[in-house]
Length: 211
Image 1 (cartoon, one colour):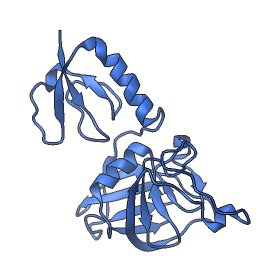
Image 2: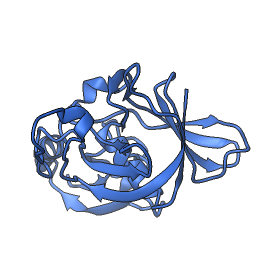
Image 3: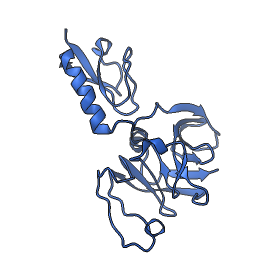
Image 4: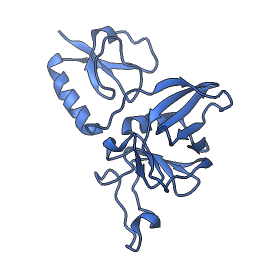
């Protein structure tokens, strides 16, 4: 028997009946008829090919880089849609999708004494950016650059660079650090989550970082 294969990317809706981690392709006979513009079938493959597809997907995205889908939660209706709110005490990031409603993601935040608070905005967006540590991190050592896509690059899958304090909201090469007070001030997200957020925002989006 041949099944249609649904391509599930980041946190797009999983086809009914699928029991998989986000970001991989899965066989699902219920997905033969596409009913959502945010999901698409890419043809029929032999079920014997499915285990290989799953393995390739895990290797390409990095095992352990996924998080559960963002929760939809209530927030203050005073926050404008499109706003990013980071609550460092909660280690949560909120993306406001409509008045009073937001998507909530787990994040890693700055260690004690390394946190910045205030209002800022996104000035640059980049996928798998190269990274040069700022002076506060490298100290007296000469400047260097970690190339794009390197396993040692802490930016992960994407970065949303902020206007203030050399900060960014970015992915990670250390998914186990998400949920902790771990950084020099930047906001870390699971790679799948930062890619989801990347697809929703644009340069100029307001960002509020609060306790």
